[in-house]
Structures are given as structure tokens and as C-alpha cells.
Length: 340
Ligand SMILES: [Zn+2]
Image (tube, rainbow, N blue to C red; front, side, top):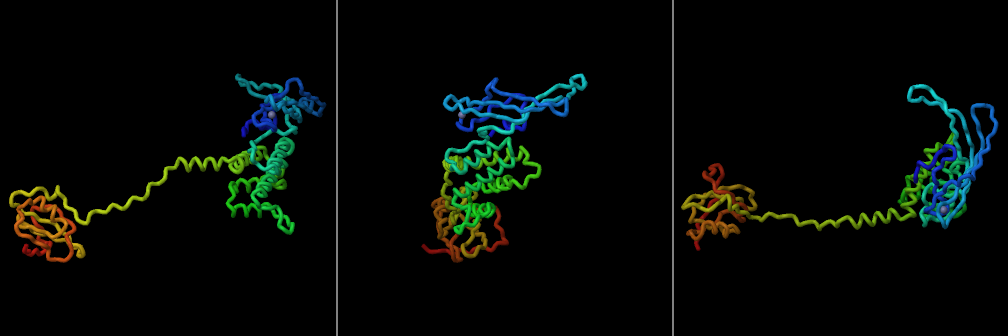
């Protein structure tokens, strides 16, 4: 909705084009030289008041709906400060609409809206300038019809009236969209709740949130946007299998190619014990009966002479680097010669 169109008063014969209530695309434009304003004598000689009537016609060639707007005209002085700081007086005339027949289309009503719902909203349009509390009450009636459309009846099977609040509670349990909007429209449409009348801003707010809800409920917007979201959302890749480190790793960089007859200190962890051990090995005399064997052999080439195996149970899991000096604090794994 375009909120700037809807005011309590308009400068003399200066109306915006109002949306046509009959067709979707046409605009109601004022018909020039068809209006009448009749002024009346009042108690205050400075202020003139009267009644006006203006005619409008739809701009759409195939519609041409005619509407009549009428209300109170008021003309009087108004004061302002000019650019020299002097107070000046001028005269202004404003028109205060009180009714328009047929009422202008304040919000869009989707084509698939049930007739019982759209009828109440249309009645509200006709009351917009006449009685704002009544206009809001028609929106509340429209909420009643929406709930009936969703299968929440206005009365029990025995014919007992069900209050709107109770029906809305049921709607909440059924997860019907825009429940919060419908609760707000129930409250703002309660005619007894506005002392001194409903402010224009509140009524416009009610139309605003109602239009939004209607577009989702009957205009298909929510379903359309949900489908777009589903289409644009990339499916999650299947969860990758956890990366498992090989049970046994040999760092070539750390072990490095052996120098001639240099000594290596391999850091060994035996499965099952989780204890760390240093093994003092000499090149040319290594044989470890474990998966490491092939990789260590690759470094030591064919200089292996006597095979060895660790005395502990389990298999070698980790081998670390060559150490320049063995850590004497760590007990060595005893390696016993193994005959081929
Ligand atoms: Zn029209």
C-alpha cells in the first residue's frame, strides 16, 4: 500500500489518484469541473465551512468506474514567518473527506481470497473516511472469515458462539501463518477499545500488516518464496568420513637418508602400552617386524644384516626422528636378535 495517499484532509481539490476498487490497475482521477462546494455562514467570520462533492473516474479504458467523494470543506487564515522574519497571513482551504462511494482500494486483495473475506475488507474501504473504528472492525470480521476458511468454525456444533480469541488460540496450535497479525487485527478492530476514535496511523498500520498477511495466505507469496529458497539452497555434501591417520607414520624428513654407519635413535611407541621408548639402533643391524619395516628398509637400503624385533607385545606405531643424542632417561625397548 502507498500510505502517502491516505490522509484526513487534502488541499482544495488536490487529490492524488486513488486505486480503483473495481479493477486492479486503474486509478481513480478527479473529474474536473464536476465538483460542487457549498459554503455556509458560521459564527466565526474568519473561518468559512461548507460541504463539498467531487467526482472521480477510473483511468482504465475498460473499467471507467465512477466514484463520488464528499465531506467537509474548511477555509480560514493560517500564519507563517516569511524569509525576513515577519509574520504573514494567508488563506487556505482544505477538504476533509467523509465518504467515498465505492470506497477506494486501500490494500491489494489477492484473487484467491475467499469472497467472505474480501467482502469484509471492501466494506472497510467504504468506511475509511467515515468511521475509522468501524473500518478496523471490518478487518477484524475479515479475520473471523479467514479462520472459518481454515476450518475453525465460529460456533460449536451445538450452535454456541466461539469467541475470536479462542479461535485464534486454536489457529496458533494449528500453526496457521500470520497468527500475530490476526491477533493484532482482533485488538485494533475491537470497536469498544478506542476512546476518542482510532488514530489514522493505527488504521493504516492495520491495513499494512493485513496486506502483507493476505499476500502470503492467499497470494501464494510464501509458497513461492519458500520454493525459491529451496531451489537456491545447495544440498549439503554428505558428511566426509573422518580422516584417520595411519596407525604408523614415518617422517622421511626427520629420519633422512642415513649417513655412513651413523647411529639412529628411533622414537617408538608400542601399541597397548602408550609408553614411549627410545631405541638405539645401528645402521646395518635393523629389522623391525612391523609395517615400518619396508619404509625403514628404504632408507637403510640393503645394508641390513641381522634382523631385530621389539621384545614388547604389539606393533610399532610411531617412529620419530633421528636424535643426535639418545635420551638416557627413557628406557630402551630391548631388541633381541632374530634368526632368519
Ligand atoms: Zn477501474
